[in-house]
Length: 345
Image (cartoon, rainbow, N blue to C red):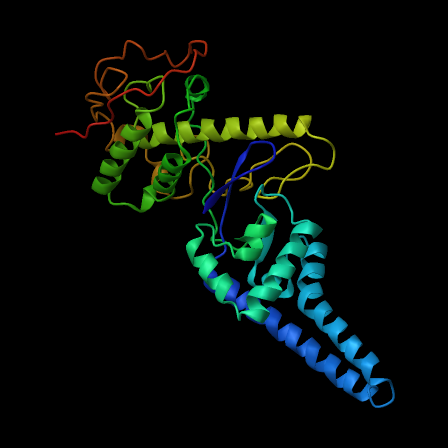
């Protein structure tokens, strides 16, 4: 996975195409191009018997260039970044800003591809793809593009806001929360019901401690780690969608970027409606361990011990924690707070 910053300064997470998948797509395109060349040479060979030899030679050179360079340029421009091989393997070429590939970028890729694959047998492309962090070949570097995969594994629905925590989450200061830490918390929540209870608790305390060190204000007393993480991630996602909606409202018509967001209208959830319902109340996850009430959770009573915001997890009330029903007005952003979750003895 990689982060792409769109023209509206919105960070979009995309899945980089792997080198073996790109190799298979290239092999399919090669087969198509060679088949076209063979048919073309047979027809020109027959035509050269009744036409001028120089004319037949000129037509052969022209059609060869059209097949080797024009084929990828025409297909990627017409199909928004997909040749026949990429279409078969679920790949797409997009700009570095997440936007669709333009003709200029397709032309740079096609010209560089002729040198990389047909003149040097793919050696420059292989070396550059292995060195570049985003798997770019020389054509991608020159054109400012990146090849992504559209057939990634099905993602779990994003965490929903636990009941009663929306007012508190609205006052969170999330400027210090990095994308890497948020991704770690998201993966933990997606595997929460598959983990052993002891491992689940230890991981939850560790990740929640890392998040609480850079997020303020502190959570309400007695809040389990997984509930705390779900509230933080749900609020972060809500603010990103709101920011994207405002950027689109200020953008000119027919704008938009590629990368999971729709091109027009209000931005909806990139995952659709959650198929399992909310794990925190209302509907349940249909047999998932979320059905158990929090009172029986192994996290209840786990001490915050040394948490950056004072108080304990299930202990004395925190002096700086806002009442669940009476949230304070948002304050100015503050720096990261020290400390973190401490597992029980």
